Image (cartoon, rainbow, N blue to C red; front, side):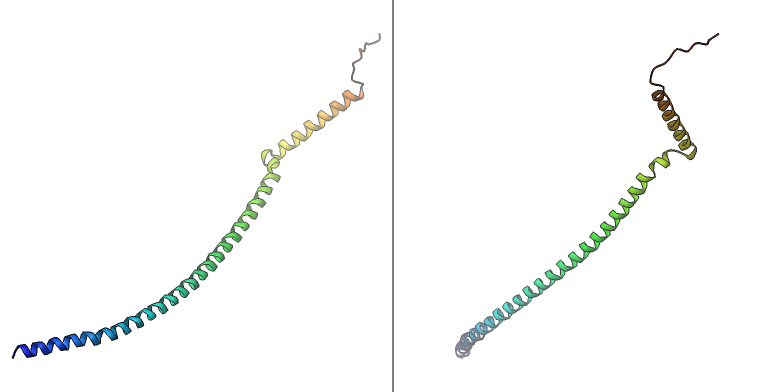
Length: 127
C-alpha cells in the first residue's frame, strides 16, 4: 500500500513541475520585459539627471566666472590707483618741493650756460 501513494505522489510531483515550468517561463518573460522597461526608465532618468547636472555645473561656473571678473576689475582698479599715486607715496610734500626746486635750479643753470655761449671769458678788472 505504501507503494501506491508513493507512485501517486511521484506522478503528481512530475505533473506539477511540468505545469509549473510553463507559468515560470511566462513569468520569466514577463520579468524580462518588466526589467527591460525598468532599464529604459532608469536610462531616461539617468539622462535627465545628467542634463540637470550639466546645467547646474554651467550655472555654478558662470557664477564663479562673474565673481572672478569682478575681482579682476577690482584688482585692475587697485593697480591703477597704486601706480598713479606711487610718486606721491615715495616723497613727502616737503621732499616734492625740494625736488621741484632742484629741477628749476638745474634748468636755470643749463639756460645760463647756453646763453653765455658755452665759453668762459677772462675778465680782468681795469684799474
